[in-house]
Length: 177
Image 1 (tube, rainbow, N blue to C red):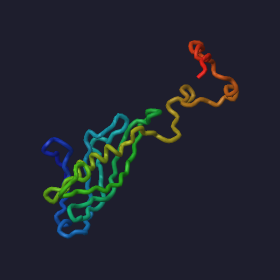
Image 2: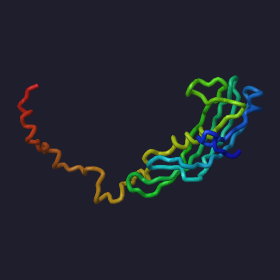
Image 3: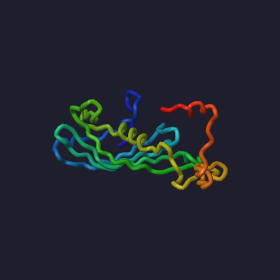
Image 4: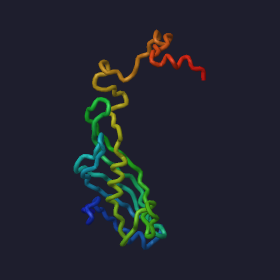
């Protein structure tokens, strides 16, 4: 199934027919969908333009709707937050979403005309799966760790000395609280 832009200019529609599943409660049907990503990103990570967000799972009938379960995979790219080298990966997200004929506001997706629209779901999942602060590796210490250390080295001589007091706060030393 191909994605098409919604009439309101929102996220692309990716409709999945659930007519056969809804006729027999408790039945399941496999679902495999792909959505081409455009303009999805955060300041430090983004889905590559034109990359495919994929979903593999199944749809199951409920008494007043359907439930979609499976796994979505989202490719991403960005810059390491420490060394600024390019970094990329694939985020995997477990999906379990409900579409209902009588949706409660914000709790389930609306089921209309025996089709579910997984386009907005995959778009939302892609944005939520992006790393907020990507790293090229856990051991990355930045561009020049010797010139710009991220930690203070332990110096046993510093442990014995009390830090120098600021003379501007000396008047507070005489207060007894």
